[in-house]
Length: 110
Image 1 (cartoon, rainbow, N blue to C red):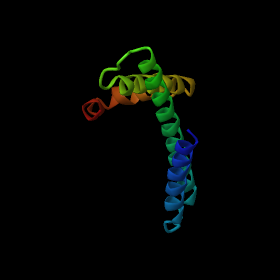
Image 2 (image 1 turned 60 degrees about the horizontal axis):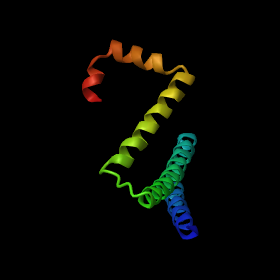
Image 3 (image 1 turned 135 degrees about the vertical axis):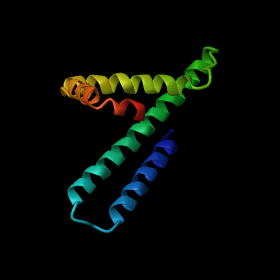
Image 4 (image 1 turned 60 degrees about the vertical axis):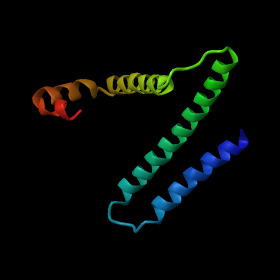
């Protein structure tokens, strides 16, 4: 609904104002990039929530009851597939595997 979109917009604006109001430092470029990523993450979270709400309504209409953690599992699966596609597209996947092969202690931290 329109009200929900305004609520998401208010949260995003509040986060941006809070992030920008902090004392400026010499790392303003990284701060601006960080704020951009925070805003993007909040926008995507709002989109994901809206899609999941619509999906739940559609499932209820056809009398399907999702099990606990179904939406979280499939959201995370989609994000993993998307991240893999991006890492392959940027050529970072093999670099990451190479790093992990040279530093096996990383696997115990994952």
